[in-house]
Figure 1 (cartoon, rainbow, N blue to C red):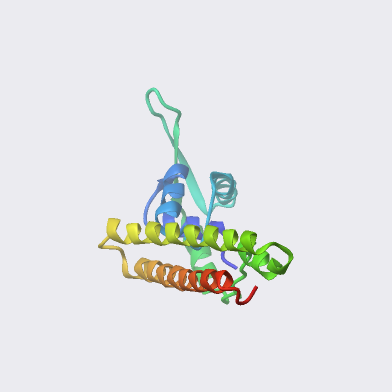
Figure 2: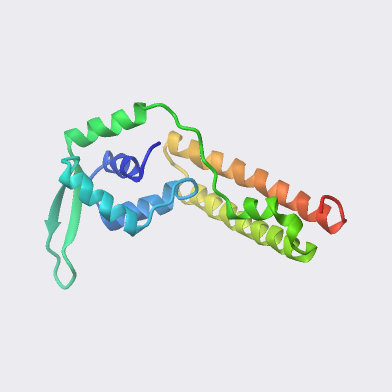
Length: 175
């Protein structure tokens, strides 16, 4: 399974970045299917620096802390390509919402409906965020656009399902 290291190396394939820049790249591109926090990014950068996959240049800044700029090495490029060429792994879904739905028979119908409504609101927010990315980056690279379109399709399908379930549960069907 591809790791945070793979994603970081992929971002660095396009040029040198600071840890903050990498976090920004995650948030503005892949966060709908791969989340990363500073608590994951910086330890990964430290390991990759230690392993010779990246180099770190410290840039002094007036009135601000020094900036660490990371650059991928040839070994990092090779590691990135090896990771991309590895066998696809089955996708694992871990969903708080779906686990609650599975055990929904143990709560009051009103609670179950609240969960569905919360999920609907969350999915609508995700759809708006992804749509905003599409509008913000109209000249997005085609492969990046494919992941955006996948995310939009996925959230649209989830929204249809949740709305259908809300209607059915309110009418007394399926729960």
